[in-house]
Image (cartoon, rainbow, N blue to C red; front, side, top):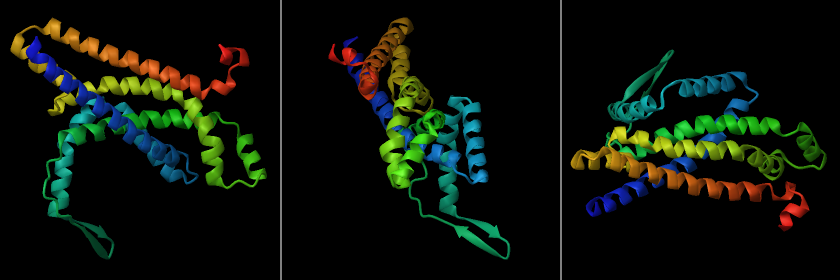
Length: 243
């Protein structure tokens, strides 16, 4: 067992790195998706809603594999160049790309970030709608600009409403990192499969992998509970705060 602890530890580090990077990138895109789905221009909002529905309807493993196999095809097409006809004229798209085979880790981050962003955008959208419209009207009466109203008044309240849902989606994202083992990323699940093939002890090593995921999830839940408690501290009774 001693010879496999170090590879398993490195694989756990890769899993955590993949999850954290996907969380940060996914949150960025989640805000963009939320804004696009809430814009007054209906065609853009409709297309964004259709995109979110499509991603949610497809199996997550299929999306991971599709991005891993489809992204090289897109890069090769951009490298070769293609022409877009625009009525009486045409527009040629061509880029000089040296490496048309992207790193599997980046493909995994892209896939997991997309999955997280789609689900998190729905949570953010619901949190945005939960804020009373009187908050915006009061900000307008005080002479605050739309940007200051959003960042100083709307966003802090939206964050508190969305935090429970986002934290639950983080735990789902953590489990979904196991999907990237299908695209040759040496994460915790991939390394566990390799060790099982060498030792022929599937129950032992899958049980160890289960314990690693469980420990990470429990620690994450404790951190999330602290964040939720701090974000709603002012809403708690003074007697509860003093304890």
